[in-house]
Amino acid sequence: MHSAAVLHVPEEGLDALISSSPTQPVTVGKLREHYQTFDLLRILAALAVIVSHSYPLTGADGPVLIADGKFEMDLGAFAVGLFFVCSGFLITQSWMSRPYTGSYLLRRFVRIWPGFAVAVVLAAFVVGPGATLLTVSVYFGAKETWSYLGHTLFMAPVKFRLPGVFANNSMPVVNISLWTLPYEVLCYLGVLALGLV
Image (cartoon, rainbow, N blue to C red; front, top):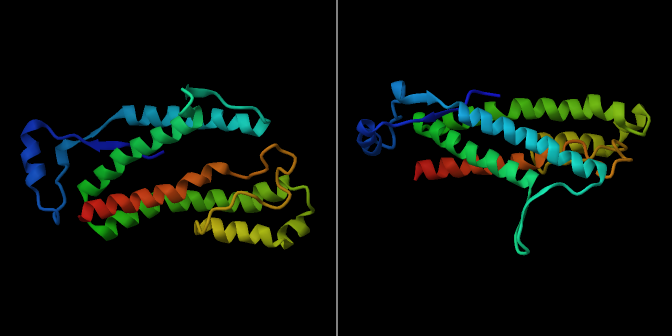
């Protein structure tokens, strides 16, 4: 998990921040602080996701935090929301500290794609052959194996099933958590668009 830092602007630095040119980076220097609260919130959200995902895997209903007849939020939805809120602050700070399109996109790519690619490749080449009900040769000969790899690596779209993998589970998917990543990428692009405006 990378270090979570946010821009803290004391009163005397606020005018400089507001009047800074949109084409110039905000000089963060001494204004940058590390808030361990973001790390703690993200750890708690990660644990909540793990707990909430254990329920569907066993065929049980997960804990509902809010239910008033019209609106319902379970533990997993709350955790994902918490991740997105924390990321909103951190990604905005990233843009504000260096508001250059190329640099911003490169930092976002390096932040997401290498770890994502490792997870997808390990699922296809390690977890898949070890957990499939098919023979290894049939597994690697299946079009779905290579479709999972190609589509998921490029989020076009993310796929969740590998042939014969976890077929006896109530939810026969490999890594359902990946569903959030295309939305995260869209949010990154949204912050970029707002930053450019």
